[in-house]
Image (cartoon, rainbow, N blue to C red; front, top):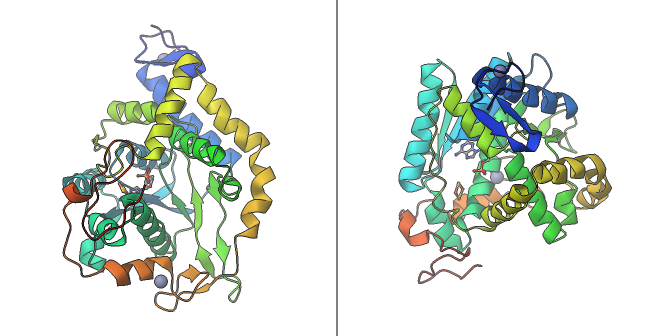
Length: 335
Ligand code: AMP
Ligand code: FES
Ligand code: ZN
Ligand code: ZN
């Protein structure tokens, strides 16, 4: 197996590109894909201050490293979600990466700062863990970016993630979500305060790289990441869509990128009107000032409902294969 560029010994084969690469040319390939994504989707301007949302997994650590390699001013933020050993190890991986390179990593801890954690929120609301998890992450990442004066937030969503989300949105014809599924979301200012940002710009510079590629990038760059996946996401729909797409990709390499890039190029804009309809009037949350369509934002309502409750261990809210959670006394079943 020879590198497509230099004919030296290759370390990885990329069937979707019908090419093999040596370590140096694979790392260059990764940087080139990120440069291309940033250019094509107007993600980051020279001089922008970037906040990277870091989970401690391969994608967000590779992303942070790649942005630094490309010369961007990128700091990190990580949220301790309180999902047992998984969260402890995730935070430790993010911290170790930052310390080794003397980088700034902002830290938020759900239990320490807001007196709840994801397993407890899931048990108390009777909803799948990813629901309060996603809500908490969105709110706190946006807040950290606005408070810290960052121009843009970058997350580690990769091609597999985006193709799986697209697959789910198409299966259920969630046209509103399809209208919003873009690798760059522009910042928004509030109607009552033009010029004041209420949502930061959000970008996904890894949309041109797969999971396998970000993992290989970390190995070659000697980045220690947490390999374990979130124990609460086991068997969820998103993972099933990924498996389905991987089966298609195995049979016809390149299908996944054709599906996602084809959507961006030829279909996404057609759904924009559906997203605009539900964008709605925003006002400031009465508690925290975050933008919301109601009186109090969903995050403050969650904290009010679950904050201060005794921690529920992860084992009690772990999902079963097939997506359903174990039922606990006093919680609603949720498929
Ligand atoms: P996930 O929703 O777990 O697939 O993660 C998608 C992206 O969200 C990651 O690549 C990170 O950029 C960000 N993210 C996930 N978990 C955290 C966390 N605990 N703290 C900060 N950012 C996170
Ligand atoms: Fe959010 Fe697993 S990381 S529920
Ligand atoms: Zn080479
Ligand atoms: Zn609020």
